[in-house]
Amino acid sequence: MRTSLPAPGHSEVNLCSVLSLGKDLSKITMPVIFNEPLSFLQRVAEYMEYAKLLKQASLESNPVARLQYVSAFAVSALASNWERLGKPFNPLLGETYELQRDDFRIICEQVSHHPPVSAFHADSEDFVFHGSIHPKLKFWGKSIEIHPKGMVTVELPKWKEAYTWQNVNCILHNVLVGQIWMEQLGVLEIKQHGGANLKAELSFKSAGWNNKDLHRVEGFIVDQDRKRLAYMYGKWTERLRTCEATLYEEAIERIKREAKSPQNSPGHKKVLAKLHSLKVGAFKPSHQDAIDEPGNDPDTEGLTIDDIPGSTQLWEVTPRPANSADYYQFTGFAMALNEMEPGIRENMCPTDSRLRPDIRKLESGDQDGAAAEKTRLEEKQRDNRKMRKHKKNSAEWAPRWFTKGVNSYTGLEDWLYQGGYWDRNYGEVEDIF
Image 1: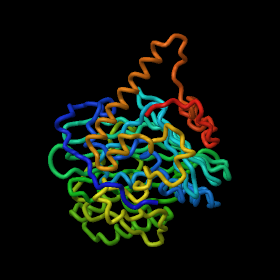
Image 2 (image 1 turned 180 degrees about the horizontal axis):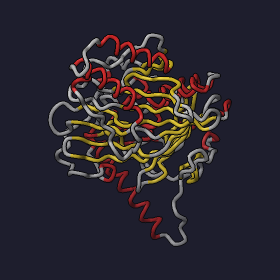
Image 3 (image 1 turned 135 degrees about the vertical axis):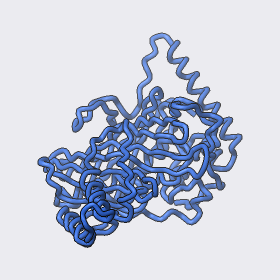
Image 4 (image 1 turned 90 degrees about the vertical axis):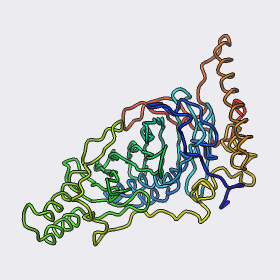
């Protein structure tokens, strides 16, 4: 697999000229200077960078351990976002993307244009991972909020278990002036369906006034009676660790003993503030339309528990290539997503993102060519929509590989894979490029 792109590049981040307050960015056309050379479908496929965590989950005989590794997978999927400021290209209606690796394969399809919805289905011998994402991006003066609406599901057939969650919100700060930076905010609630019916509740912390909790994530696995079974902690940009709930409680007791401060003194207040942060913060109600921002108390500075003796490391991020800053801050995994590997084109579906000429031109450093192709493709998509609308007895457009149905675990509407993609029968696929 390649370790760089055909040409260096970076994405523009000064949004003054194209944005207005409260604007939904998913509904406006952005100049290619704001893009990175990937489709959003390819960004969805980046979920799979740490697919080995799902394999490990399937190997665990303990339901708590299985949920720990599924939780690590959910957190790991966010790591590639760090410092990635480029906006992926909006997929065209009917666009697809496939990716095959030794331990999984995934197919993604753009199943709706208004609103934009991307569906995906990944499988292997050990797991099935599927869902649909309806991203919403809004501009609020100094920041952009990214709401990745939609539920995702992991199934472990060996254990007849499933796990469901909705990703937390992402905030880009200082998008107009100053150093732009990113944080994930909210509560990630992962429900285990079948077996022990456990739940993981992970709180993604606000950076705070002094950045002490920047990127921090922490929380507990609880049973149906809300008894704490395990504590998980770390940073979504670096790693996730876990320990038994009793070890966490012992660490809290140690903080109490070491404080040795009279009641109502600043040191005593620090301890109480930290206890409140650790014990209550991870259990705030989850609402993905709201930003979960715990109170930022300067008295809690320096009391974060970064390493609890007896902890196990569930996941650690793979370092980015040394040349990442020259290529849109891509990870090593992302570098290869648009690569046309030898022999792949002969079997590829004609709607695959790798065949998009605008992305291919931007990847090669041709911004003007990319802009022209992007405009052409958008006009072609509008023309196709008009033709279907005015054509007599024309059936309503429908996705080729996914169909709207009900998720059997959540009871919510979802896009479900119909099967057949890997049979390589693409005879009636529409020409969208």
